[in-house]
Image (cartoon, rainbow, N blue to C red; front, side, top):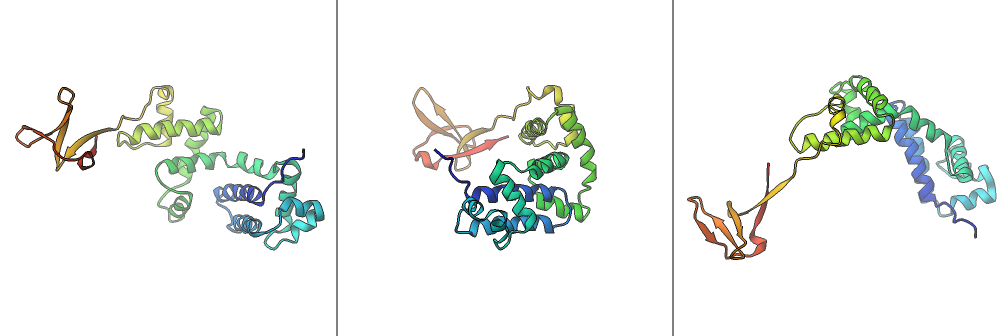
Length: 228
């Protein structure tokens, strides 16, 4: 039984991966756009790309509007080997950028915002490359570096603390112990706190003067608030 053909969507996904890594390199915008254009062309194309290649080879790929010779060669390589050497090279080349980008993502800053802020000099991008490189060396792999950043980010955010890439170094030996602060939700009704009586199996509202008033409302009337 022959394996199923790769779908145009699967190939387009690989082209977009290349696009994302090219964006990290912060170079000319034309190359990322070319890969996005090619991905869109594949998604719009009615015929399965692998069938086109089997019938017409590389020339058939180059004939698709929106796909140039260089990208057609990458598609050919992927169809033949299920790998793209260029993509692997980009992954290796952009490890530092990936760490910096991921760090900012944990702070709610997208790659697009990061690039805009760096261009306007609101963020000095080069300031983050050295600690990112040090973290990569300390962690030993990109995945471990990202996991360490996430642990510190979750821990710090749950306590309303700021954190930097350097914070990961300081907390490195404690990573296994760092846990996000437990989020506690407590019930309120009409702005007043409530308590559950296990004995009477009822909710009570605590009035401003401390009286326990039996709650006669519905469960949906109870407001659950996060208590820091």
